[in-house]
Length: 374
Image 1: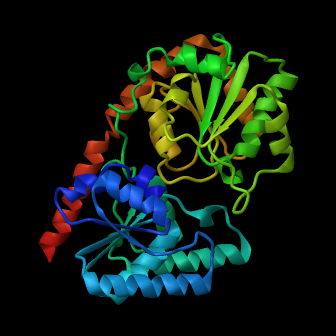
Image 2 (image 1 turned 90 degrees about the horizontal axis):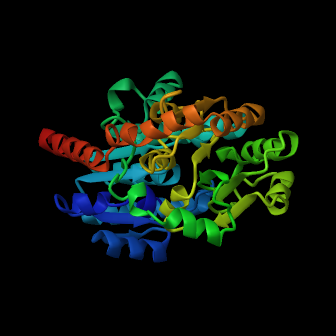
C-alpha cells in the first residue's frame, strides 16, 4: 500500500537513473506495483505489529538478499520496514542506508510501549547513514527527543515523501462528477459535504470527527450537511469506539463508502476536507484535497500545519477536541466569504510548494550527491 499510494510514480522515475527493486510484505500487491512502476520486486514477509520471531526471520531473509545483491542504496519507509531494512542493510555493509520518517507512532504511545518504540526508533536511525524526516515538525521532534544527531538528518525539498501530481489531482478533470456522483450517493445538490479520506482509526481523530458532526446535526440542528468517510476500518491496531461505530451506522447524514482506489471523484463532490489526526508526517491527503481546491480543517500538528496556513487555505484546530472541531466546521459552512477565500487559495498553495516532480528531483539530487561522495 505504501509503495503503491504513498510513493506512487517515484520508483518509475528513479528507474530511469538506477536499477530499482521494490521490497514489501504483501506478495500479491507487490507484484502489481512492480508491473505498474516497471521495477523488479522482492518479497519479504513482515508484520506491522511487534512480533520478535517473525521480525528476526524477516531480518535474516533481507540480510541474505542484500548481501547477495550488493545494492549501493537501501531506502526504507514505514517503521517496521525501517528497523528491519536498516539493520539488514548495515549487516550487509550497504554503503548508503537511508530512512524516511513519515510519522511516528511513538508520539501517541505511553509507558512501556513508548519506551520500546523509542528504542526501536533510535536503533533504526543508528543503523541508517541518513534520516529524512518529511516535515519540519518531525525534524524538530527527533532532535528534541534525541533520537538522532542533527548531522544525520535532512528534509528533502520543502517536505513530503512524494509530493503531489497536481495534473492528476485537478478538479477540472471532473466537470460533471459533482452532480452524478452526488445523485448516486443520495446527496442533495445544496448539501455542504465534509470529507475525510484515510484509515478510519482512533489516531486519525475519527472519534472526535463523528462526535463533532453529531453536535452539528443534533445540538445545532444543521441538517443539510453531510460527512463522507472514505477509507477502511482497522479493527486490530486502533479500533474506533463502539459509540462512534454506532453513530456511523445510525446517522443518515454520515456516509461511509469504504476504501476507494481513486479518491478524486469524492474530493470533487465535497466542499471541505476534515482531517483531525493526532499525529502525521506530511499527510498526502491534505495536499491532495488542496490540489482539488478544497479548504481544509486540520489539527495543529506537524505536517498539517506546514501545509495549511490559517485563514489562507484552511483552519487549524487543537487535536482531540470535538468541540473545537464542531465550531470550525460550523464557521466554514456558515461564512461564505471565508469559505470562498480559503477555497480560492487552496490549489495555488499546493502547486507552488509541493509539486511531485520537485520532490523527485530533490531526492534524485540527494542520491547523486551521496553516490558521488563515495
